[in-house]
Image (cartoon, rainbow, N blue to C red; front, side, top):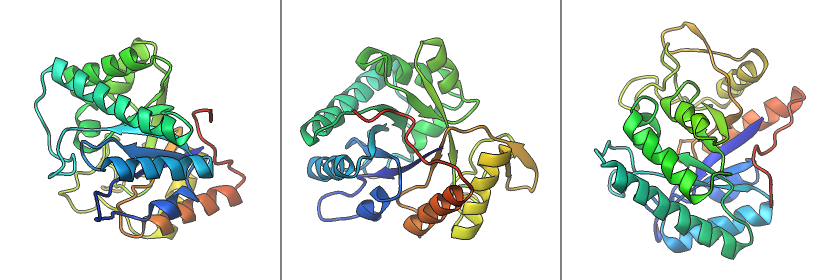
Length: 252
């Protein structure tokens, strides 16, 4: 099982989360690309730290929305979204190569991630951008999403993701951050949920129902309160159960 986190989301002197600590825990780093978060120096230094620790670098592409942290829907024309995703991929890949590695997968961020669960036009645009940049890059997304279906049709490798620190609706989508139960905070609860996910492929939704969730990678958001403690608890719980935590994308 892969363990990933969203990193590089500070800006200038403002810092968000503890990237250095997370990089000692996770196997894959979803590094911001400057559109929803991150300035060039922050992103470059995050890439350098990931390379030093042997953590795989992924490009976390998002809406052009620094003030809203990429969590507000934007109604894009396809050509604009394709170009924006290509721009972000090229920028982070350049920084990653200068740091000694390269981008090895793509994960959409925030509102873009949630939008392309069902929004076919934007999902197709993201798929097209990845295909044009490098068709060998895997894409990370929500199981059952339009995005992963279109990516698979386009010949891209798809990786199903689950969220350790987020609540789920009965249909397998994430509880909106505006609703109660969207965020989980207890490290022990989160770790137990992820062990159940790995061993039984089920989770308990916000309404108490049991849902089926198939995943190849688990995300702990780097900006969540107590993110490092939750990530460490998940790693220790899975390792104690004999689950090997390793990146889904190969290290160059």
